[in-house]
Image 1 (tube, helix red, strand yellow):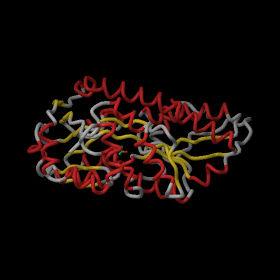
Image 2 (image 1 turned 45 degrees about the vertical axis):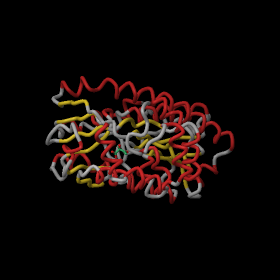
Image 3 (image 1 turned 90 degrees about the horizontal axis):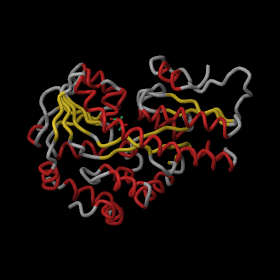
Image 4 (image 1 turned 135 degrees about the horizontal axis):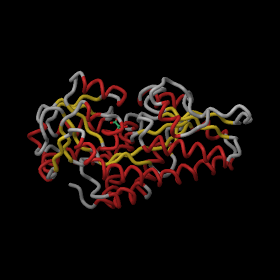
Length: 337
Ligand code: X2X
């Protein structure tokens, strides 16, 4: 079967079928490697990963066969991260905030309401702040991150109970967060009732009302069809989140230098295209989701920041990250607290 977007999308519904199958007359690749992600096959992250795999195959003259496994086919994020560390998985994309369970410094992009716009995001993540985080990831000795982070987007809150206009509306709301310490800390500070769950469990947890809400960018709400089990979407944009494209260090060191250079170049090249796709989607999906019955509201975020400040959220994370890293963040965002 040819590696194509159409086949990948079909694959999204099948279980654990590899999508990098080479045609029968092609010679066996020197490196047949696996990439896993938590997102549906139709999300631009996976569509661009397929494009990456195709170009990698051509430009490596068939030496690298990158097989794409979307939508938690290889396990949830927590499983995939431990597989990546042990070498059972070769490459994956992961939120820096979930990676925070292993590399605490990685969470810094998730500080509530830190980045005012995408110019600040890319300046920081492609600049010194991202560089600092990648150093900490490499310091694990087992995994590393390529140097252009892929996009997830600004996160907004959806739920099945009421529109969120002010922090009071969040009080006691049973909110799923991804399994990362900063999310729990932030939504506790806002007096919601956060429950950390892997993305693999989100749709069913919402459907069965184990939780009432969740927070994600619109491209995820749409591609994971969360609108089927959520009524309200409140445009809080409370943090920006991305995906480090990561690899197992030992595996990557087995690539010859020319293959290492090639893959590094292509991950960066497709990162830029993926960022543009995600941004276009996040900017255009409101109308589509509205037509499917979701109710949107814009949110004045000042009261949320004030509450976070008053609760000591910024002071606590400043202390955890340290003065140097915090100054690095504020170099891009301006003063936060
Ligand atoms: O788990 C989530 O909500 C997701 C898909 O946004 C992340 O990967 C952090």
